[in-house]
Amino acid sequence: MAKKLVIKVTAGADAPERCSQAFTVAAVAVASGVEVSLWLTGESSWFALPGRAAEFELPHAAPLPDLIDGILVGGSITVCTQCAARRGIEQQDLIEGVRIAGAQVFVSEIMPDGVQALVY
Image (cartoon, rainbow, N blue to C red; front, side):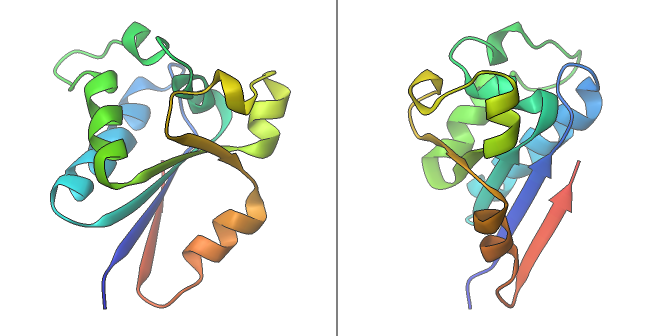
């Protein structure tokens, strides 16, 4: 059975190390052949907008745009419905390949056997 990793990142530029760690783990997992679903909630939602990830800086960390590109190669990125709405973010605003979905979809992703979920 294939393994799936679901990661929910709750931190953005307000907690750069936690944020970067989530994106890094997701990108490394995709590169290792793991099916990855990265969920952006709270302040991390902003990184689903074109150009926003390029503004993120953390010494000794991989550039966020490169990590996002790597994740989208073989994984998925989802922005929380409520988080997007609170920030005025709509589907047409997002980077190509990123979607908006709610808690029901998140729960359906984490419930199957063999799924591991991490929250940052």
